[in-house]
Image (cartoon, rainbow, N blue to C red; front, side, top):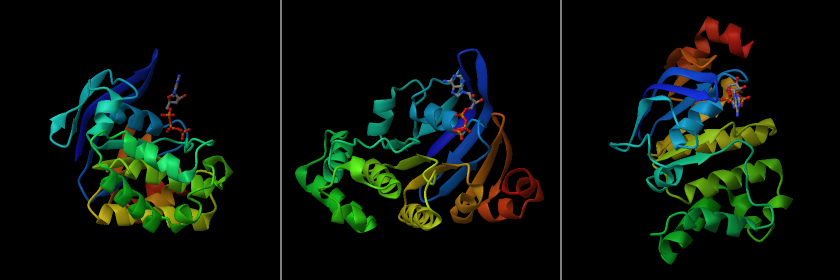
Length: 235
Ligand code: ATP
């Protein structure tokens, strides 16, 4: 679904990514793990078009998208759920979800309603709290809302930046299971996490970033058994 080749990214004078290659197929969940400052967020921002790569190529759903503005990439199905949730606190849960849908101008009322029903089934707590202001939700509920808002755009690829950040282990497990189910339903999922263990457990493949370089790659299972990874990241 996405194929990034030799992606180099600089922020101002600072080089952040050095020739990163990454592929995610439909139905596959790929985890990008790495320590603080490794370049994970920069990678997602370059893929979604929020940052311009200095060189390299990004192919998405059969077409080349580097050079295309972020909102065009999102409409084509490349959806980014940024770090920090970024729900709109003064709008209700349902209004936040409908804003996700409205990014797609071609969506009919029936499609919006079926999107809402699907998200309320995925995260029943959002249905219970549909009329509550997003700012009054717990951190875990806000993360679920951010994911569901992205899914209202019917992504072909959903990219998530540290969805587990600051959440209780039980909520993290619930969210990771929902992402695994999503991949099993055919969506390509790219998950960026500092909490490597949980992400690699549900991933088909994993990639370790260090200092802007991809230093290890393998199946989630292989990486979890890799002594270098365990020593460097998992303790
Ligand atoms: P974290 O888990 O802390 O978000 P990360 O792996 O996502 O880390 P990035 O946020 O991509 O890492 O940052 C990678 C490097 O780029 C870091 O060294 C960071 O200091 C630098 N960097 C990121 N954004 C900027 C910026 N706006 N200006 C200057 N340097 C930046």
